[in-house]
Image (cartoon, rainbow, N blue to C red; front, side):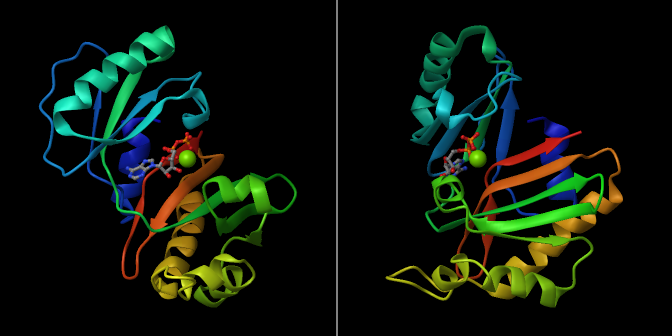
Length: 202
Ligand code: ADP
Ligand code: MG
């Protein structure tokens, strides 16, 4: 994950948490937040949590300690650190897009996090899509049930999510150098969201 990738999303109006990228041993001044997430970044650290490269719920005074621990454990694989503001709990969904040689750009939506691998409950469409197509994509998945408010989960604004799906198609269309986009997870709240993990393959 590069700074330019994070900027691509914030520039396109996609909300990402406050962040700072620092090199190992670089001096830095941390922004204020209640809690932080520290992630080790590097070409070999693709599935970060599988590699133990994500530490959530970190207090300010422990950020540097966690960075050092990650460095000790992962060594040279750590090219930089991403320090993010810790986002609140919510419904985790995935929004992704890929170029298909035969069909064109394909956009994907579904429940995020571990649910992606577990249920393979995702919907796909060819870009460009209308807002209505995006509503349909949401309705085709279990995410729709959870977004309506399921067992204590809060109601998530469907239009907000649908707009986000259409926006991912637009970003693919505007940036021919991008091969793949993965927002996983986007954490949904009732009237807002936070794209806490973004991946771009160019
Ligand atoms: P990866 O997908 O490479 O393993 P992520 O950046 O997606 O790494 O982090 C793994 C998990 O940690 C996410 O699915 C999410 O549940 C949680 N997480 C990551 N970043 C944040 C954040 N800024 N705030 C809250 N939770 C986060
Ligand atoms: Mg992720």
